[in-house]
Amino acid sequence: MTSPTFSDGAPSWVDLGTPDLDGATAFYRGLFGWDLIPGGPEVGGYGMLTLDGRYVGGVMTVSEDESPSAWSVSFQSPDVAATAAAVEQAGGRAAFEPMNVLDFGSMGGFTDPAGAYFGVWQPKEHPGFGVVQEPGSFLWAELYTPDVPAAAAFYGSVLGWRTDELEVEGTDYTYTTVHPAGAGPEASFGGLVRMGDVPSEAARGPHWLPYFDVADVDATVAEAKRLGGTETLAAMEVPGVGKMANVADPYGAVFAVMRPEPRQ
Image 1: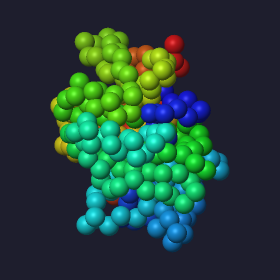
Image 2: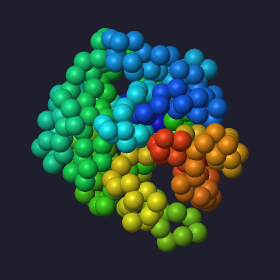
Image 3: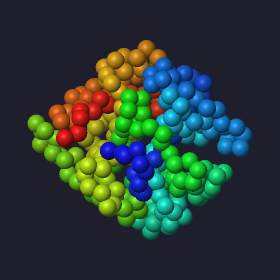
């Protein structure tokens, strides 16, 4: 999983695009205790989400005509321009050209060859997450893709990832985890899943799904429903991993919540 110290190739940020900024921030405030620092015109109204004063992600208004409401995941790069060239060479494409964001850093948005969107962040004054792996903060990232080996090859060439195969205890299922180059499996921060294995996620097409740490999955799902959200994948316990469930906010943006077991 992610370390609080940043490394190239690892997740460094998550963004929420929503048609109702006030409604969405009220939902996540009630669910995770997040506060909003509104953004000014110089950043297009892009706001920062915080937990006890520490950054957990960003949010901006997108019209339903522009894009469906969704979460996206960004990964750290030492050179966004070089990453853009690597994406094109590996068969992906740029959703928008790399750009500077004031003195905070540089960003790029891309889609992999299967069509899953991901962001890349080259930090300057803003490194990314202020907290991870605590209740209410980012925990894990998961890619739903039609071809796991092809996805592993693409991200390996673009972001330098390495993969490991994790046999899920008590099943015959093998889960592909990813970690930065130069690190071992203990630095894993995400996984690759064949879309057909999870029909509810397959219906959304190839995409990245962020996980947020919670102390109690059942209580979090119940609160999400009370606040107007829906459960899109019923809570399940995975031996040796933890308990998890998928949830959609009132505007359709899907994310996962998880109570992880202590790592061995």
